[in-house]
Structures are given as structure tokens and as C-alpha cells.
Amino acid sequence: MKTLNEKLNLLKIKIDGGEKITIAIFGLGSVGCYLLDYLVSLADPQLKLVVVGRNAEKMQQDVNIIKTAATIRRQMRSEIVVEGGCDFKDVASIEAALKKTQPDFIVNSSRLFAGLKYGTISWSNLRAYGIWTPMSVLLGKNIMEAYEKTGCNAISINTSYSDAVIPWLKSAGMAYFDFGSGNLNHLIPRMKFYVAEKYGIKNLNDIDITLVASHFHDVVISKEGQAEGVELPIKISNGGGYFTSLNTAELLKACSIAMPTDQKRNMMNASSNFDIINSIISSIRENKKYKIHSPGVEGHIGG
Image 1: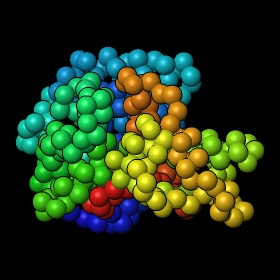
Image 2: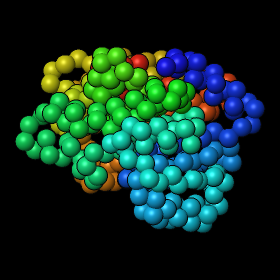
Image 3: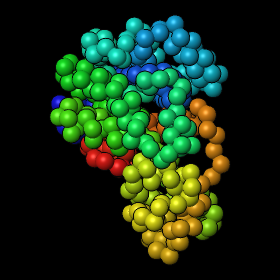
Image 4: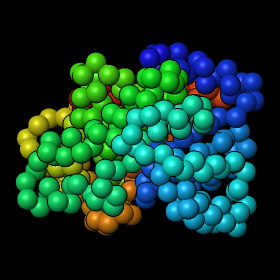
């Protein structure tokens, strides 16, 4: 398995050479559909978007509505390919899909049980995210096993419980995802909302935040507005210096805002995936630095 920097250099060669950038989305549930829509909205003719899964007919229906909506918005510039017949429980099936599609990015948005949001069950009974780890790791493990067997060099992103799944894979001596997306990234905008209102900042993009946290604390903060008494590393600035007098308890409390509990929540997860991909491509094209927040990065617990 190549290092992340080696993979980024390979991607840079393709981008600079004007070659197609192939982004493979494994699993076209709600996260995958939102992500596909966001990527299409870039109106980027250099992107080739491949959706991979078992049911080609179902995926084609989802692709058709995304393509139609994007065409109405005059944004349909990217190529979309449907790659059906891939069983994520079968490593050999994933190997075949990787060899055929030759992706530059892989996003694992598959779920062992489609449509089931684990947190909606565990939170009402017990703050027990660890019990969902085996369910979250299984399909990701299969994808990364196939990834290693095929010598794939794609930049890989996992979407489910990444600050547990990715360290698990690394600790087992297996190939592991380069990035994770998820709850860590969901807190940043909430903090920006609070800071913008408190200091009268009109452009949320002018607010810069660095946060380190675990999946557990991400969820406790967003659901309860507190961090169980743990002092988390947070730095916030607006370009003119850091805010040093912020009341952290007040900041965390402001993060507990009303949100839907159904599949619409996956807009946030898909946006995290989009931000990782778009930041990487933009940084290469523009020779600029972008900060992203990612759970499980480099196989670390937390994010």
C-alpha cells in the first residue's frame, strides 16, 4: 500500500495531464446519492463518477434523477457510470470492480443494513457506539482487502464510524482508509454559527476552527451540548487572531441545535466526503492549502 503522499503525487500527474479523475462511490444509499449530486454540481468535465453496487437497475434510477436535476441546473458536465453486480460481502467481487473501474478516489458509503442509522438505536438505550463497530467494519474491511490484493492506488475514504473502523484495520495489519468522514466535521459549522452571531461575522468562511475530538464526544456535544467535563483542544480565529475569551461551555451548548433524525442527516456526511475530495483536487489545481477535519486519519483513534 502506497503512502498518502505517493497517491497524491499520482493524482497530481493525472490532473496536470488533463486525464479523467475517476471517483468510485461504493454503495448508492442516501450518503452516496447526496455525494453524487454534490460532485455533479461541480460541473467538472474532468470528473468520471462511477457508482458501484449490487443492483444496477436501482442505481440507474437514482443516477437518472440526479442527472436530470443537474441538467435542469445546467451543471451536467461529468461522466457517470453505473457498475452493478458488485457484492460487498464478497472480496473477489470487489476486486473485479476495482480492476474494471481503476479509480483515483474510493468512497465507501456502503452499509451492512441499508437505511439503518445505528446511533438512533444506541442513543435511546445506551451511549454504546462500540457495539456497532463490527457492523461498521465488515464491508470496509472487504473493500480494503480487495484494494490491497489489486494493488489499488486510489485515495480512500470511509464514511461509517471512521475513528473506530480505520484504527481497527490498521491495528490488524491490514490496508486502511486514508480518510474518514462523519461527526467530527458536523460540529465545525455549528461552532461557526455561534461565533458568527456572537461577533457579528457575516461570512462564515472567514472563521477558522481546529478541533480534535473522538466520535463519542462529537455525538455528546451535538446531542447534549456538553463534553462530559473533558476539555477538548479547540482553536478558533477569524484571520486577525484567535478568540481567547470564548466561553467553551456556552460554545458547546450552542452546538446542540434541532436536526432531523432521518436520512436527511446524511447530507452532512456526504458533504464531509465532498469536502475531502474537492479540497484535494482544488489544492492540486490551485497550489493552495486547505484545512479539512477527518476522523480516523492515518489510522488514529479520534479525529
